[in-house]
Length: 302
Image (spheres, rainbow, N blue to C red):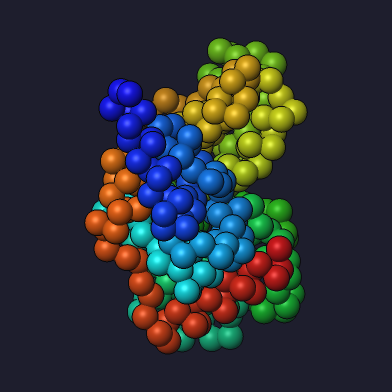
């Protein structure tokens, strides 16, 4: 048995011994996919976390995702294999700053993108993901202004699609914010006739130039319908599609669109998480209760 096979066997044994489930985001390194029980986008993984009866959740992603899993499955131990895996966009808003902005604006509905800390979710009325953001905003009273944190690009897309007046926070994803209309034009030259799908964290003009606007879960569904795709998102999404659809051809809109934090997870770290060598993710009360309520409102609206 080679080293990789031995590592995979150890992970399988530990997972069974600890009644564990491994949740994996679409942007994770391809080596993680074979050991995952569920692979998906933030909304899909939030639902899986809420449904699981496992005693241990190993969340292969970034910290805000592991926090969300803990909020929705409070009895489980939740471990992030790469504890340093954060999110620069999530760090662009704090609970204190959001509280101050709400006081300044008065009666607004605060919508927190799931790419936020539990403390920020706790200061919000409802959460959303890129997959359900439009639906969530449309579920709110039409006469109440909406403050959307932290992604200005997603906020503008939601305003475009819903017709609602939205006050955007000035945060952004450094991966998606770099895409340009010129990238889309180049993709059309290099791959004529191939659909271009872009994530709603991209700038609005890029989304308007694309054929489809989709979350990573939506991109996965598009792969069932199209044998070829160009994807305007983190490059790992093409690996995800190739994993389940090896006959498909998938090209990243920009090969340099890499999230450094998403690539921190390794199989060795997954093994260590299952062996309880990594600290648990915790969310203190009363933050947890208020943040959980915002997420549950999202799931109900979805």
